[in-house]
Figure 1 (tube, protein in one colour):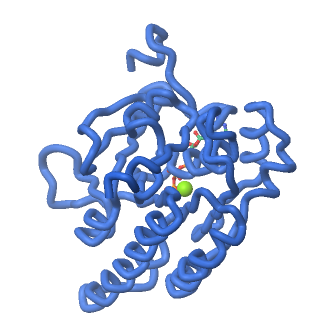
Figure 2 (cartoon, rainbow, N blue to C red):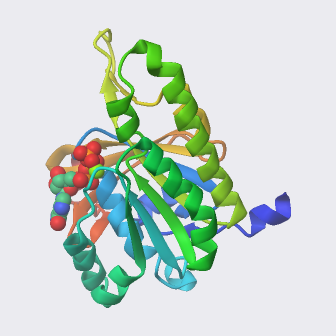
Length: 252
Ligand code: GTP
Ligand code: MG
């Protein structure tokens, strides 16, 4: 097992600080979950990773192709092209190395995940993204009586993703929204959706919240190997990048 762990790689997020928080970047052999409210920047992180994963190993990438399972129809190729161009890459080529799969409902999402076990090794895929993991489940299973069925189906998909990361030494990135708990009087009323199933299946959970002046704060909230630290980044034409310390942005 130790030997296998030595083969672990990381993929840069574009922000050095966020990479540091994650122990070098998004790790292979793990499911990394980004959690946050709408507009937090989860999809922007995914877009940046679509580009950085294609970089050579010595440039912080994984030197491979990307699968993007889009469940909400929010993949914007122009934005990915912009990030690629700003990073000095051929945007056309970068887009050509991203396999986009639109999932139309939760069972379709399950079929796509099943297919990854064949698709990833055959197409030199080094990163798989599911944005968002739980959107369809929330929309389809309404009411308390369907909860256990929903959690079972979700659990099944999450465990397949975890198996995928181990079988092919690649990272899986998933996104998740937060749900307001109206019964909260003190502290943050928002909590990640998906309950315990989601919490246990993800290896690393990272909470993103909006900071002042357009910055974002990322906090590791659950991980077997990372300390519960936080850091700041911002969304720019480069995708995501560091906030320069000592500037006005850093103080908010
Ligand atoms: P949901 O999917 O709704 O849960 O949100 P999300 O967390 O995926 O948010 P997303 O990643 O879509 O972030 C949206 C934010 O990114 C917007 O509020 C913008 O501030 C920022 N953003 C989007 N596109 C650009 C861009 O081209 N340039 C810059 N600088 N910022 C952008
Ligand atoms: Mg999104």
